[in-house]
Image (cartoon, rainbow, N blue to C red):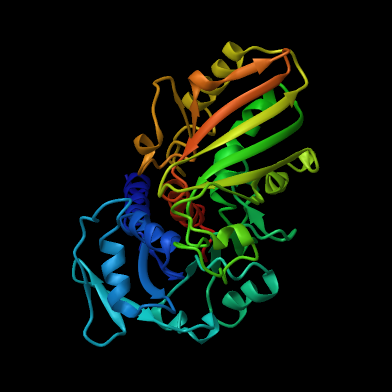
Length: 368
C-alpha cells in the first residue's frame, strides 16, 4: 500500500511540475510567432521579451495582430510604463537593450532564451548568455556552424542533443523543409548528389520598394520584394551537412525570392544510388509521414506531410509541419534522377520547431 501511494504521489509531482521560464530576444517575425506557439505549452512560461525597435506598444500590437497568420485569440495590451505588456492580464517584462548582456534575464527567472535576432551566430558571443546572464539554455533561430552546437532538424537528429549542449539551434526554415526528404531518400535509396531550389516568400531582409538594403550584402535584395522574382543565396543545402555529415559537398542550391507573404515550396532534385520510380518514391515518403520519427510523437507534432490533392500556397498558411510532399509533382528520370516538391509555411512551421525544441529540453530534464 505504501508503494502504491508513493507511485501516485510521484506521478502527481511530475504532472504539477512548474514550467520553465523563457525569454525571447528579438521580437520580429520568428520571435512573435514562437511566442504565440509556445505560450500555451504547459512546460514553458514566457516571461520576458527584449526588442530594440518599436517599444512595448508595438510588441503588444504585432503579437496580437498578424496580416499573414491572423489575429491571436489572446488579449494583448501595452503597459503604461514602457516596461511591460500583458497577455490575458499576465505581465510580460519588456526591455529594449541592444546588448543582450545588459538584460536582467536572471531577474525575470529566465532559464531558456530563444534568440530570434538572427545576429548572434558565434558561440564566443552566445556563451555569454550562459556565463554572464545566468541563462541555462539558448535556442537560436538560425544555424550556428560550430562543432559544439547541434543544429536541430526535428525528426532527423534531435537524438544528438544531450544535457551538455547549452546552445542549440533550429537550423533554418528551408533546412527543416528539405531535411525530412533527404532523410527518407538517403536511408532508402542513397544519395549521390543533389541540387535544391527554394521558391521562398519575401522576408524582412528585402526592400519593400527599390532602395539601398542595409540588411544583406545582396544587390538583388535592394529591389522591390513585392514586384520581383529575385534569385539569391540559401545556405540550406550546404547546412544539411550539419545534419547528415556524410553528404558534405554533395548538395547545393539557390533561392528565388517571390512576391508572396507566406508558404514556400522547395524543388529538390537528387541523383540516387538505386533504381526507383515515382510511385516508389511517393510510397516511401507517405510511409515516413505516417509512422516513425517524422510523424507526431511526445516531443513534437507531425514533421512531414504527404499531400495528393492539387493544393496551392495559401492552403499551407499556418501549417505547423516542416515539410509537406506535393505528391502529384514527384518525377523520376532515367531511374535515378528524382524530383520532389515540398511545401512549407516558412514562418509558422519553423516557429513551431523553435517552441518544440525549448519544450523538448524541459521534457528531457536538460534545464537544471
